[in-house]
Structure formats: structure tokens, C-alpha cells
Image (spheres, rainbow, N blue to C red):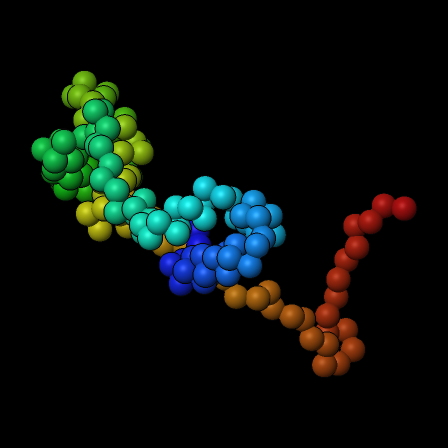
Amino acid sequence: MTNAADRRHIVQLVNEAWTAGARLSRVCKELGIGQNSYRRWAGGTEDQRPHATRATPGHALTQEERQAVLDVCRQPQFASLPPAQIVARLLDEQQRHLASESSFYRILHAAGQQQRRGRQAAPRRKGAPRRHRADHPNAVWSESTRVL
């Protein structure tokens, strides 16, 4: 997307070239823009796409359903389980389907509750491997298993 300042500058350049006698199609082609883009920019209307209202999909979860997912995840028996296991246990034990696994992840992430769940320790970065240093004879031995 071209920002507003660049658009104004391009419109000014095209207007100058057009009043000097250049064809609009050639000027736009030289600048790498379409004629329709130029006309839209010259009309002075700002790009409305970022401000457009978007319809909510019909199959989107309601706020009550999202809250039910959060309530289930906060229950003691599910508090330490990842969403994949929560969904599976709900289906197995209670024959209950609240939302898909990916929806569980999205809802937890939006609520700021998607951190490491479970008894595993968080992964740690390991340092560089130790270097063997020979300070005196026979200090470091190695073995080659190469077959000739």
C-alpha cells in the first residue's frame, strides 16, 4: 500500500505531466500505477480498507461460548492440560464438544492464558558444546569409527 504522502506526490507529478501534454496512460505506466488508482487518489478519498466494518461470520463463537471455554480450562482437572488434551477428555468423559482445539488455543491466547500448561519444565537453551583442550600429552583421546 502506498502511504498518503506518496499518493499526493504522485498525483501532483501526474497532474504536472498531464498539463504539459503527456497522455495519462503513459504517465501512469511510467510511474508504475494504474489509471484507476490515479483517479481514486486524485479524487481525494482516503483508503477506507483499514476502517471498514467487517461482518462477523455466522459460525463464530458467541461471547458466552468463549467464556464457557475459559471456565472449562480453569477447572482444576484441566488447569495443567494443553488444549488438545482438554478437547479429547471432554469428548471422551463428558461427550461434550465446546469448540475445536484451534479455537481453544485462540481463546486462551486472547485471554492471556496460553502459556506452558502441564508438568513439563519449559525448554531451556543449551550452551555451546564443551571444547576439549589438550594441555599435555595424552590429555584428549578420540576414536574414529570410519570404515575404509
